[in-house]
Image (tube, rainbow, N blue to C red; front, side, top):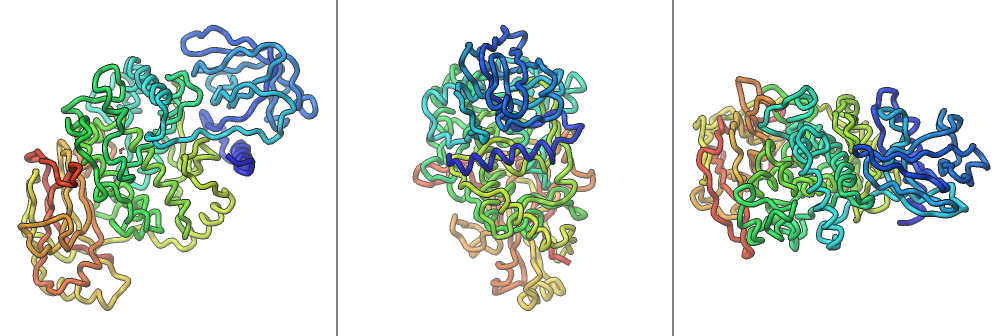
Length: 601
Ligand code: C2O
C-alpha cells in the first residue's frame, strides 16, 4: 500500500468523527490508531472480554511519546473528554490484545464503545511499533482477497472462525446459526431479540446492496474475533474468472465434518461438491449491471437501475435492480441446495464469499465512473438496519455510513484501484442532478393467454396475442426512441425455489428447440427470493405475487412480425467441463400468473 493511500484512508477515518457520529449511533466502526508504551497488562478473559488498563498521555508534545503505561492517539489530538479522564481501558472481544512489556510500544485501532462504559473497544491489533511515531499512521484497511489466493494457513483460520461460530448456541448473536437466521430462517424465534433480528434480508428493493454490505461487515468482524486471528478478513469468490467456475476447493475438500466450510448433499448438489459441476459465463456475467449508469432507474436489464427501484410501481412488489437480478440471483439459483432459497442460503458458508464478490462488483461499478453513483434518496441514506457486533451488542448502520468501504468500514478489495475519495464525492453530486424521476408507472400492452402456469424442470411457453392497438403502439416505438418496452413475468409464487434458473426467450425461431445461442434471448429469470414467506419483509400483497421484468425494446424494434409473441422459459443450471447442461430436477417449483408486455407511460 502506498503512503498516499494511507494518508487518504486516515483522513477519511478522522472525518467520521465529525460527520457520522450521531449521538444515537450505538457504535461506530473504523479503527482509530492509538500508540501505547508498556507495561500494559491484559487481564485473563472474563467471558469473551479481556481488559487492558492504560493512562491517557497528555495532548501535544506529550502525546507524541506516550510514557510507560500510557496511550495517545496517533495524531496527538484530543477527542473530547478521554484525554483528561486519566485512566482508561481497552476492552477486547477478539482475544487479539496482548500484554505489552516495559519499554516496548504497540499500535492498536480502537473506538470508544458507549455500550461498555465507554471503553476503547479494540477493532484492530496492529502490533509492535517504536518511536518516533508518525502523525499519519499506517493503519491499513483489511483486505478482502480472492479465495483462490489464500494460503493454507489463511484457509485454516477461515475454517476455524466458522467452526467456532458454529459451535456457539443459536441464542448467542455471534453464533453462526443466529447470523444465518438474520438472513432467513423457518425456525421460530424464542425471544424479542430474535424476532427483531431474523428474516431481515433485503431483496427486491434498492436496499439490496447496502443491507448485504452491512450484514457482511459485522459477520466479518465476528468471524475475525471467533478465529482469534487479527488479520483474518472475509475472502471473495470470483466466479467471473473461468478458472474459478467450480466451487472453491476449500469448501469441498476435505469432504467431511472436520471441514466447517463443507456442506454435504442434498444441501449442496453432490456434483458441485465433487468439483464436477460448474457455473458458466451465462450465469455469472454482470455486463448489463456494469453498463448501467443509474442506481435506481434506467437499468439496461430490468429498467430499475443497478441497485434497484426506489419504490415499486402499482402491481409490482419487487423492483429488483440489475446487479441483484444477474448475476446475484442467478448464481444463487444455479448453486442449488441451501443457496437457492433465502430462508436457508446463509447456512452454506459459501454464501459469504458469494456476497463478498457481489459487494466487490458494487465497488467496481462505482469506480467505473461515468456518472455512476449511489442513491441519494433519503430513505436509502438514512434507514437504520440493526445487526450484532463481535461483543454481542446490537448495532446499526445506515446507507450513508457504508458507501466508502475504506474510509467508513476499514476494508478494501485486493484489486481495488486506489481511488481518491474527494474525486468520488464530486461525481456523486454531479450525477444526482441528472437523475430522472424514479417513480415510473407502467402501462400494460398485452397479456398472455395462459394463466397460472406451473413451473418445473422443463420449458414453459406463453403466447401473447398482439392485437391492435397494442401492436400499433409497439410498432410506433421505432419512431419514439425514449419509449421502452418490458417483458414482465407477473404474479410469481414459489414455496421452495429450485436449484436452477430460466433463460427467457422472445420469439425464438423454433420455440421447441432452443439452444444457448438461439436468437431472442431476453435475460435470465430466477425464483430466488420469490418465496412467499409470512415472516419475510417482502411478502407480496395478498392479491398478487412477485414480478420480474426485462427490457425488450431492442428485440421488439427488430422484430419482423408483431402479430403474436411467444415467450419461452428454458430451465438452466450447472454445466459440466464441456459446457453441457447437467440434468435438472424439480416439479411444481412455482407458478407464473401471466406474462405481459408493458411500456413506460
Ligand atoms: Cu440476501 Cu444473496 O442473498
